[in-house]
Image (cartoon, rainbow, N blue to C red; front, top):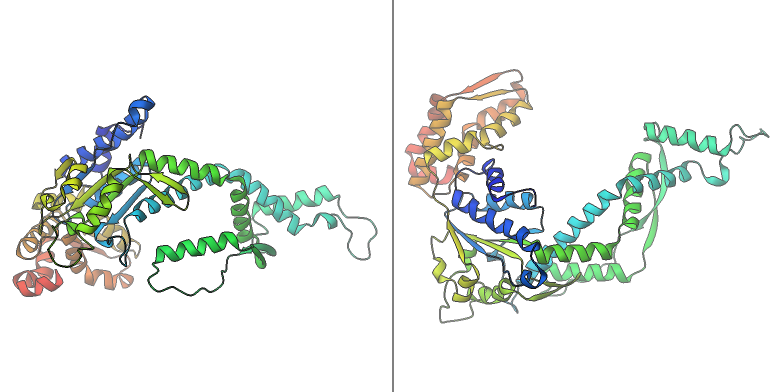
Length: 446
């Protein structure tokens, strides 16, 4: 993040997300503040709390996309979860502590991948030596064929000849026998009420306690090189250092995107336990405020993890959240509904624009798809009209319309190699006008 200023972060987000400048600006400042905090004196650094954000807006306007793109830019431990998945502690379902455990697992994998990449060259060299030992066993290097008294080549020369052939790929299809770790675990009975998370912890505990069995496999040299390189890389990477660095990153630069937070908004109804709404809010509060969570990698503090929440809030409002949660999300940004002009830009401007995606997909079949500007305008008109007449699902409406529009072309594409298909406004109206006129039908199709 030291390479990206808030203005540059917004510029990067602009490549994929149309509009919503207020939300982009808020998250850019929040992420940059993480970098700034790292450069403070230690006594002041602990006092600077993250400024958590709630993004409010209808579905399909870019809330989740902002979070996804931000994660790639930040190069920090990032986790996206849906608040509606959690239940109050003591009930069947996931508890909110799993957020920090999952984030820590992501960070460990991230750091491990970095360290593995750093030792990849050395690991490949060691794997090559092990492969040569298999192909040319040291005790038999240079041994004469049966019936000959003198060796044909010196041991060193024979090994180097095989090394050259190995590096040139001439031995890739030869079969070798290698020893690999047997990862099979004994069958264990699934306990009633035990969730997936609990079972994973049991499996990992057994994996660490039981002796590692080895089994022999016959594989091609190319596959053996990959397996052996992975084994050597694992030996070269210090997992204690990896875990320590991962926990440091989680505690200082971790980001959690809490989606669908409006689904847990709502006050106690006065009858029965509210285990998936206010109960979840109460459990979430200490995590957001800052607490220490026990993970399989060690204790992790959540005091300085940045939380970005998002929700449509059309059946509730932020004020329906408990006051303590509201206080821990001091920044609120509203994302506006998309207009026809936004749809036109979404279809053409982003690097991952739908028009570019479909053109590239059909080009793999040799079909030259050409969407004219008036066709783009008509698609935007229809998306706006259908969103207004039925449910407003934002930019996701474009997916349903494009699929319906290009259904016949996609179906016949394997038999249309070399054909140029021009999609204009008249073609769009012909394919979709009947559905738009029949509002009841459009509810099911578009």
